Each structure stands twice: as structure tokens, then as C-alpha cells.
Length: 297
Image (cartoon, rainbow, N blue to C red; front, side, top):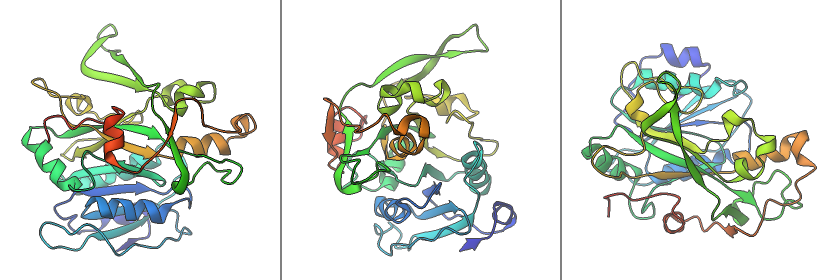
């Protein structure tokens, strides 16, 4: 299915299905194919790709078999990725189309991992999360970077990807509408390349937390800081116990630092003493404390 503009998508009448739905914004041509293929394998029933009209990509036919035997659906929407609100416009348009459906959003060269991803689908995880009376799931954006920047000057190399094994921390999120008091069950998380190269990253863009998985509902809207207009969606856990978290392993920051003239010449390698090769396995992320299974065993 192909919509020639965001406006055409908004006006079209068609069901999104039962979900879960992955919303992918292609900012450039880098690793679009592998991003789509990864999320098909994760078990998404629908992949929505928002990309410029001139961008081409291949759709991988294989995906994790759906529980109801259905075939995953790919929906393309021609959409200009430039501008701070490009992702907001895409996500909020999809929210309006699918109340009650679980959704994920991310960019090209970003790969969602959830606990036990090799043997359990994202749909199975979200079924459990729903049973815990949760409508949103916190994800951490974990920076990936190529081990050899001379061979891969854009810092993207899935075959030799590295990540930081430490250097992550959280601060209390303050409420500007309540004398800057700490907000209940909300934290701002930092680390990775945005922390190590903070002089090149505006303060408002240094956070690595994202409510990457959520269940759409009428009136719900994503905001520019990767939070939602419903406070409970922005919490890391419910009131009675800890919940699942997931990780979005992303080349996006490394790519931006290498493309930005202000930072490119000062970076010969992203590797440091706390760098480790990324195994592309969920267990490594759990072992490093970069996502938690909560009560899901």
C-alpha cells in the first residue's frame, strides 16, 4: 500500500489491523532495508515507512509468523523527514487512525530489542504488558557505532557495531507546572554518545529515554521531547511493581556526529575503554542492565 503524501494517508479509509504497528521514519537511505527486516522478524503485523518520494528500498519478505496466520503488511507514506516535527506528524497521524492498537516508532538504522526477543515476539511481550494494565513501555535509545570509522565514515556498520557498556544515569524529572517538584515515576535518562560528546548536542536532545511502545487512544499525542500528553504514559513503572523495559539500538547519533561539520573532524573513533562489541542479542542488553524483563520470565 502506498500513500503519496501524509495528507493522503490521513484522508484514506482503511483499517490498521490488530497490530502491533511499527512506524519508521527514513531520514536518509542508510539501512532502511535492514531496519524493515529487523522489525518484521520482531513480529510487527504492520510496518509503516514514512520516507521521501525519491527514496527506494526493498521489502524483505520474511517475518515472524503472526499468531493468527496473517501476513505482515508494509505501508509506505511519502513524507518529508526534514524538520523537527516530521516524526511527530507521522506518529500522531497513525495514532488517530488506530485507537487501541499497540505501536512503536523509530528511525532508519534503529533496531528495537525486547527481552527474550530471539524466542518471543513483540506481540507476546505487549500482551503481557497489557495484562499488567500498562498502556506504554519505556525504551532506552542505546547508541551503536562502527568500530572502524576509516572504513565506515558515516559510523554505520551493522557487521562491526559497538556500544557503551557503562556511563548511563538518571535524574529526577521536574514538573515546571508544580514549582519544579519531582514528577511521580518519571526520570530523565542520559548516557552513550550524547553524554560523551555533550558539547555537540543541545541540552534538550541529550536524553536517551523514549516511550517507544505505546497503545493509541483518542486524544493521545506525541510531543517533541519524546513524551506524551498523558502523564501516566511517561512513567517507567506502575505503582505496584517494576515493569518491562526495552532498548532501541541506534546508529542515529553516531551518524549525526559524523555528518555534522562541527563535530566530524574531532572524532577519529567512538571507541573508548567502556566500548564492547554488540552481539545483536537481547541477553547482552539485559546483562548490561540496558533493559529489564520486569515480571516477565
